[in-house]
Image (cartoon, helix red, strand yellow):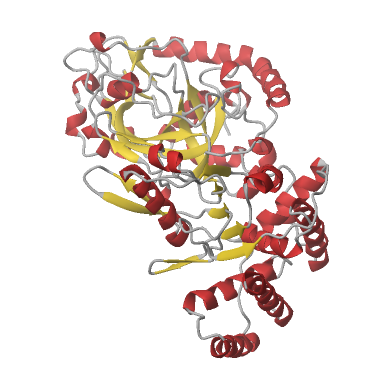
Length: 589
């Protein structure tokens, strides 16, 4: 590694420069590399190879942005809300006969006058936002991390200043903004690039899409050395890289000259760094639910089936209490919470299990619905709620839409991350007429429920994006707007007082849910014939059963099995799922 003076945590750009010098001595040629990584990624992956090392890096959010210094190493956890194409930058240049690099930086350094040789490289731009509906328990406490980080940076600051001064003296350079008049990079127009971002035009208004809450901090992430297919829209990602942020940075339209339509300046006008910090990503990883847990031993250590049974029993007791001792509804709720899309056949999302609790009115919703909604916020990382009223459907922007005036994808309510739990409350729906927006929104919701797809409006065409969202509907009668996979009459017998849950118990339940959802599952050859025979018998008994009903039974059996920590379906769990479905149908009679 780079040694103490180039500590990856406290002096990331020093580590980048040091590794660049080492790469040059080993034959790395910037003039032919097209910016290809020279070992920085491996260096940082090695340095941050375990969770304890990663946890030392501060998370960039609306709180930490007030104390994290520019050029520091930070993490940003968020969802890719928009992909802005590529931009050019001055990646390397020659100072006399020595190559220098500006990679992972917004600010470029050049010797006085034009550099004798310079390489223009390319990087991708992602506009990222905090994950919509992210619940508070997933967020790390920042105060202890802040103190620890400031201690580390304080210890290394003096040494880093000395090293940086030596490097600056040897380079005899001035710090200039990328694209100075002396640089031939200034004359490179975005129109010459073959990227989607080259189509952007500088708007008169801000190009910053609205965020979900005033406390949400968006981030413009700049990606290097990563295949375009590796990351996609709506992925939840943890980016680790160098922060570039100037709270006082502004750029006025009047200050732009005839050459000012290069992408970096157009992007800066739309998203000034004073409002949207930049993160120059060195390494990244896609996040799953387990990455948001603080004590996920259940996920990483082998556990006996007895452990799963014990945790399942305690969680079932809690859910049953929330639902007024309706044990059957609680059973279905647990299966619903463990469901996920694990395959697609044509237009069918295999594994989804939407749930419609009926016989709920305004009064019972205020008691049971509110309790359940609050409970799910403590159990699941991402939760959202939508009121299914005429007024809401007629006015809400549910589907994302492309705004070509500013070349930005404007988010809709349904642009959410995979694994999000969505509650739809139909109990306050009153008779009324849907306008064209309302009809479109109702269709968007129905398509999400049935196919697990969201339609994106790109003005000249529309595109469906696959997603994986758990959907729970509350309604008085069976919902006509949202035809769920399972409809169950809610039959509470009493209102229980709210149970106080310890942090340890809540964490155990979260780990249980995440672990069970992640389990692979199969049906053993010995049980396949039993299942097939039972399905044939069920079809003969009830001719109204269709292929979707039989598929749902298999999904329920799989979820029943994984709820006990099992990866292979047993006869016991198959029969339990079959019996649960019988009890549900009895209630519907």
